[in-house]
Image 1 (cartoon, rainbow, N blue to C red):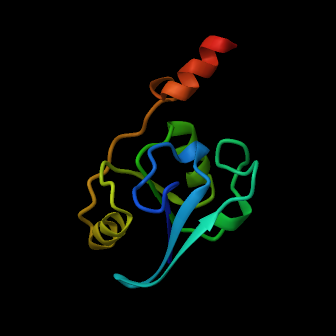
Image 2: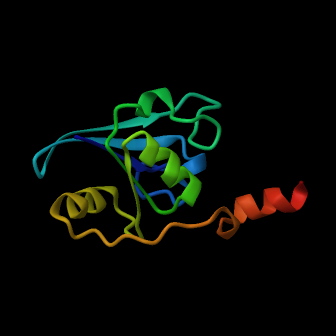
Image 3: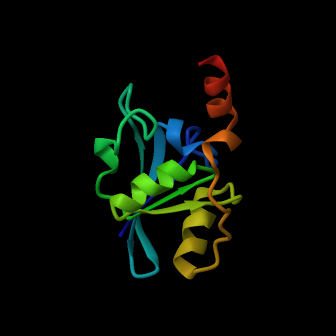
Length: 123
């Protein structure tokens, strides 16, 4: 199983999955992490701008600090589980998810996201 975690700075979980371009990719077997790699999406690729970025097409789970409900829906259509959490450490988040103890936040509507609300005001 592959788990992607949003992380622009490589240290903490990014809270806006739609605009994120940096991800930790964890390869797991059962409840163990067997590999971890950081990837950077090419310019112009993100969940916000494309349906599913090429480098993330084989993931099973996406963990982020936040994502809009429409992104959750699009991920579900691709059989990818979407998880929003307040946990800020990528390793702890993945281990907690694997152990079934990661606290999840409810889905966010687009209007709850400051950047989307700003874009709507400009339109």
